[in-house]
Image (cartoon, rainbow, N blue to C red; front, side):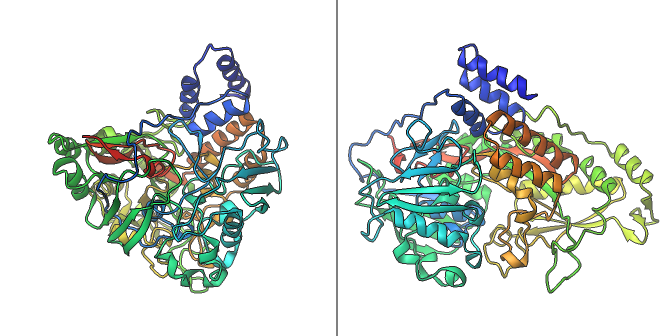
Length: 597
């Protein structure tokens, strides 16, 4: 869709000829997220409405214990080191951001007193600064007041390279200053349309200055409170056993009236997705289960018992097979998969094109994911079952063979293709999870018919998604040729964060303790240029067009092979009432959760 066509759609919404929801649906059909659709309308002066809570309890407490299952249990509780969603969810029980994203992609205030805008003077017209006003009367769990000083400290903490925070990308290029006891100003080096990045959502959770100020930079990993959170959230810390248990109790000084409802919360780790689904949907032992990447046929059988229900949230979760653009088998300065190296075979475009034709997305979606996944050829997907109109996928072993033949990859007597002494033999790894192992088997079978040999490796999820920088089997180390996982869960609020995963400055390496988000080690000057342009493009329509072009480049170059657009699948007890959003943490409104008889 061209810029003129986008502007025409905005005009139709203004004139009342097109609904806001329909407009956003058209944006996601182009591979954009709901938040950027909302941003286009908001920038055009079309106001949005925040969701109204149906919270019914009239006093805090009295709800007993809320029991949840994170079968990949958190390994730490400092949001600045949360490389995996499990750690972000565990941290979100105790810590809060200034704002978060509602189901329609609109900003919702938490520790902020209001959402900044041009109208209220919070957002500068030139896009170079934003003022956040903070709620007053908020206290940390130890009784100390929450102030602007805490926000300034989080900026200093995260932007320090020696801290090696996963959040560094949100704070590195900004300046944060205290302008009042409960107000901060963020200044950007250039016009910044996506100003709602720092201090927002999972990467924006705020930690207390008075607890962590002695652990800046290289001392950051030594802080005892990386495992003992002191936050502002609805629950106070009680106990943490890494990868096994998180326990909290009601915060009696929580700043929201009549909240929270539950007296305590317990998140149990371990097990697998199937056992977690069974414990909520079939037996009713638990109230909540996260990330149910389980065959849909099994989920339906569990639901028949009536104890729980499956909730699908369609955000940006995308199951992909990533190609390693660095060499995992060569060491440079003691580092494998170094960005200084180039993969000896994937540098051949023909091999990447062939692999793209050997992934039977349709069968994987139909027979494994069912209602929880949709076949896609797109990186950016959103809440309607559509893919970008500029991308497509197909399964064709015949075409894959033709491409490899033409590129000079000849089949050896053992059936594996060779060229210049190199064999098409790859290590394909993922986490242990039944749908993923079945997907691996489907891909391996197709590859065999094209003369490509895949060695399959399955790593325990607790290891694969570990935040331990010394663990060589994490997905961020990527010591394999191919790797399958979902690189984003919950959802980034704007394509900018999701697309940053492909920029050259986010290359994952030993130098940044494997905290960089470009796990694939791919770099492209044109992509970097478009990303930089999108970062400072204030016209939301032009910015949207840039993201579409960036998405197409990723797919065209086969940087990743999208498999299925995954719903964020959770299990909820039939008695639990909770507002969920595909654009943020499942616990984004944990303070509003309650049980209804």
